[in-house]
Amino acid sequence: MKRKSLDKASRLAFLVLLDQSKPIHRGDARHLAEALGAHIRSVQRDIKQLPKVLVKLTEFLDAYHQKPPEKPTYSVVDAIKLVGLREYRLRYLAKNNSIGRKIDGQWRFTDADIEALKHRPHARHRS
Image: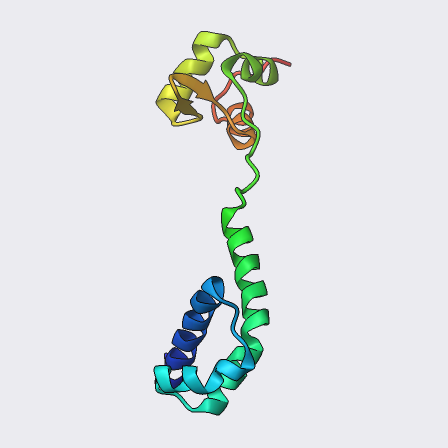
């Protein structure tokens, strides 16, 4: 990153933090320019951009705090019905073929796991 863009990013970050404690006005530009060691015009531009930066930061924070949608998982009982295996065989395949995951001592299967169980090689499928 270039020094200028880093300086600008630092100024904007400082202005955001400062704005959180006390709203910044254009009249503060001269004092801020002296404190930051920047040109007054640069600080004025930064102050003008501040509302847009605050909106963008809020969007970033919202996106960061949103959890991705969880994929549905199936228990052993549900998977037995979907695949058509006996419970012992399903647990055996899960353990030995790395299909499914154990969560809190319970086997959980995703849609991909169910498909892998249905279409496993050398399986004796019932017609």
